[in-house]
Length: 185
Image (cartoon, rainbow, N blue to C red; front, side, top):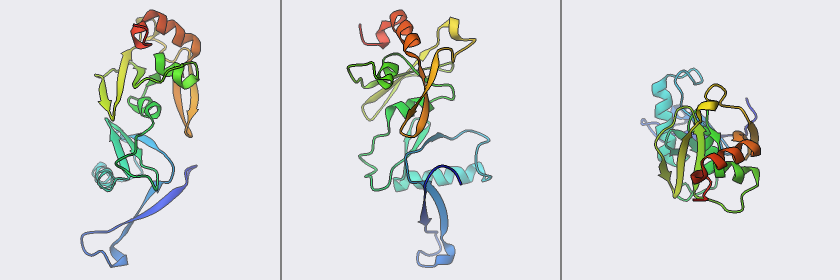
């Protein structure tokens, strides 16, 4: 299959809960997984089927949704108290997300304070929003980086997934340019 450990979960259908012949098997990863539902992506199932599966797992508490990002709830975790990792969520909010400013210093280990605001850069920015006490802010790239948005970007492993983060040098330059996103103002 893939590098993930998979857990098989049975779903009852409308005909009857006791009959094994009318149960379907669906696979959910047993470790944390974040993803976005993109057009043209799937395992051969129709978009309607994928949306029905997402709806089913959202209702069961096996998935959490943050904007357009879906996150699996780890086994043996209470769905109502589960908070997805803010760095992983921000890295999936757009296809070209790069963690930047104070958030980059936090993940690189240079920050001495933990903020509840998570900054990421993208060519396609959206309005800031909050989820479970964490504010997600998209910062537009400077004009000088529009032609090469991944200049000075490194990949960092976080909970088994890779996220794009601005390097320490680029982060420092960006924070000097716009200190309001570092927290100095």
